[in-house]
Amino acid sequence: MSTITNENLKIQSLEVKDVRFPTSLGEHGSDAMHTDPDYSCAYVTIKLSTGLEGHGLSFTLGRGTEIVVAAVESLKHLVVGLTVVDIYKDFASFWRSLTSESQIRWIGPEKGVIHLATAGIINALWDLWAKLLNKPVWKLLSELEPEQLVSTIDFRYITDVITKEEAIEMLRKGKTGQEKRLEILKSTGYPAYTTQVGWLGYSDENLESLCRKYMKLGFTAFKVKVGRDLNVDKKRLRIVRNTIGYDCKLMVDANQVWDVNQAVKWMEQLAEFQILWIEEPTSPDDILGHAKIAKELKPLNIGVATGEMCANRIMFKQFLQAGAMQFCQIDSCRIGGINEILSVYLMAHKLGVKVCPHAGGVGLCEMVQHLQMWDYLSLSGTMEGRFIEYVDQQHEHFQDRLDVRNAHYQAQQFPGYGTTFTKDTLIKYEYPCGTEWQAMFAKGIYSDPRK
Image 1 (cartoon, rainbow, N blue to C red):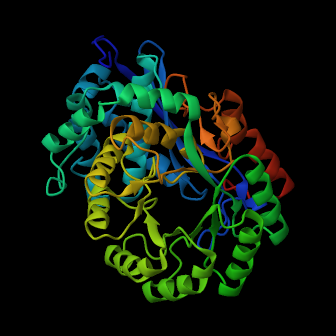
Image 2 (cartoon, rainbow, N blue to C red):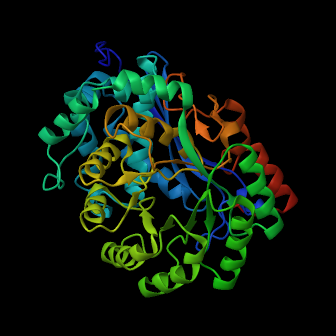
């Protein structure tokens, strides 16, 4: 049963906090474009009149988080006072009420900071729905009847690729064999690749050491950051290939640093390392540029992966239509939460493109595992050629711990979306008043923004 029937469950409050972690001190997350990221998030708490809370977040890199927090505050009046029955029985309409508020829409629409704020709120509502039913989100999604799941999606602007009727038919077909796939998922988990080995700020020695570490943990697919210096890239990729061999898969990520022609030429120079994909080779908004890169690199058997900064389902639609991505990388926070992400999965499935989610950061691994497991159980029906990204950062801060064993995400059994911080984390890392930030301000490691 996936329906909430208690009509008295009213949303009493919505709060949002700025939570940051000083990851730049160890150059964790560093790449050619983002040289000093402090993994952070706008952390949303939606509280019911009964006291039950749903938690959602929208990932950021430090400075600027306060802007997302302000955007969440601007949407609060559209949420507080509603009953969850009214939201969940017509979730698509509620989603549209957030993304189409007539004045706030002007500074989007359906993109940028406002969409990041929307994702934080929507993620919290799905966490709440799953907690009300005492289920993990992946289980809630996979148990929804096709009609009910489709009712959560706003199909405006994408019906030229997929309609509600087509989506329902796909999901009906996806029910066939679901129980058998569930047994496989529970026994083996979902395959992962790791980016933890290859941050651009890491030394060569650390790069090699981490490759060996993650091979021992069972990983056979690795991603390395590239794009700052071609000769350095060749040196680093040679270290990686000499360590992991050529039986393992290797992907690279330029994080938007190149022009289109530069991307093609650069990757031609790296083709000797047998690259599975080049990720974000150019501007994340350049659909035709990605299509050109994909066409030029196809003879080299190098695919194009992108999507972590794709603004909305409409841009995903065009990337998919143009053959501009061979690997579709949804992000659990970049577009408007689960509702919109479901539409991207459906379009990718129809157009035959594999979804391999972007993860890492704060809470992204925790969230995308639910989405990819739903896809396996209810839509694509396969794990072949698909992975979930894994980065070993900030997992200890969540109440329900991520479980990755033998390079496979294990199907979580706790209720919710896995997005609830521990109380200790909020005490230490809420910015700028948390005790850890106060200590770093006092030592001069960071400057106190209030002075």
